[in-house]
Image (tube, rainbow over all chains, first blue to last red; front, side, top):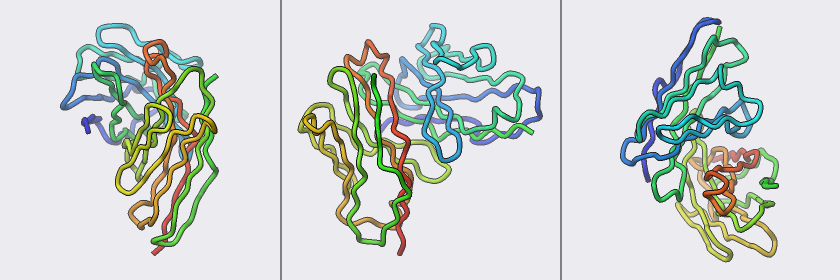
Length: 115
Length: 116
């Protein structure tokens, strides 16, 4: 299957700082990338959908000014958590889908802890 | 609307036992159906999928059949191993997929624990 990487795999930051998470499709071109958030022992919650070169579409209840998403190329999307607070601590997972649009391939996730 | 309902876990089995994890769905149109597996501390991996009624997806000894009449996609494995311990997510993509942006709708996940 196709490979998606995320960096960093985990990050600890102080409250009020911003954190950037990268999502890369390594062996396919991801026309669309998705960002999810997962709380312990819960399912994935879709945060936003981004198409290459376009503004991201955010799900209801997700603050677009807090979670900045950039999808500048067909192999890279970034999620920036601005002015992070402890309640933003979570497991963030990205996924990508290619031109054939058949299957989403998921990254390994990034664990964020805000102190 | 579109939704996925999975059996609650955790499911605890002994090695070599038979596994069934129930999944039913509600969807507009004719969705594609998926099972994803998440091992501890990792992201999701596609386990298997089926795109139309009566299709059977299979991988690594796991199987699931797309049952349109019962709107179900139950996951089965004849003999589980300790290494199968993970969280299993049933999901669907509503069709037409382009209209829904290829979004995945996930069930809540079922924890499977296999004891040796």
